[in-house]
Image (cartoon, rainbow, N blue to C red; front, side, top):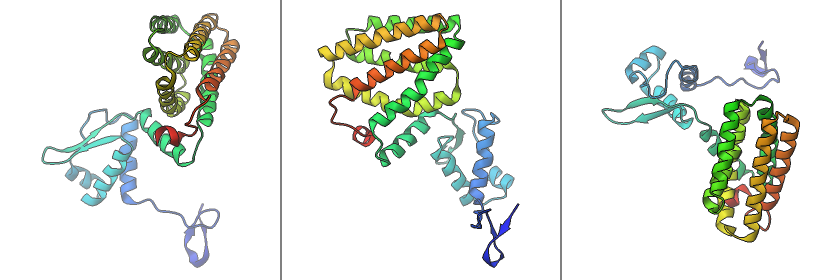
Length: 261
């Protein structure tokens, strides 16, 4: 349904003019659909510019503008020159993570805000994991805990294993939406963790925090093995809150901009 505003021009339901997409946006949208539906696979070369210009009935500048849109979304890579051309790239969560970081920096978002968001995402994932886990999931979780225990005396290696365990919990929950959202905050959390390692690696407080976190990881695996979903979610919520309290204590960096800027 279309309404009209003053002067008889087409408008939206609130009377504001409707924006007509540019031809380059329409071409980009068509190619984007082909990529996300798998009609164009990773590494595939797009047809030549001449072929695409004929298919979409557009000029070369319009087609190249569409390419720039898709490049900015990391859906294609364009190589210039005689042997150049556009090739398909698989969409990755890292693109959303980088963009989310910029937006959060611009908004002056606090690190506490990001940590709170992680708790909202990760804690339910622990419950989902406990409800859905397989024997293979348990083997992967136990292997991750064993690897962290082996690295306990190496602060840098241990924190890497610690972060990978958190990512594994979300992965094994098998919820793609939560996984993408987690990737957007994990980029920032991981940077904060590395920053903290640089500040107090090997200190008594750091050693106590690492051992407390390690015990929480082991306890989570036990609850997952017992399929105790509610208990797993609650334990993980408490663990994340303790980690937040430790990581944000006595920090000079309080915002995402302080950390990433």
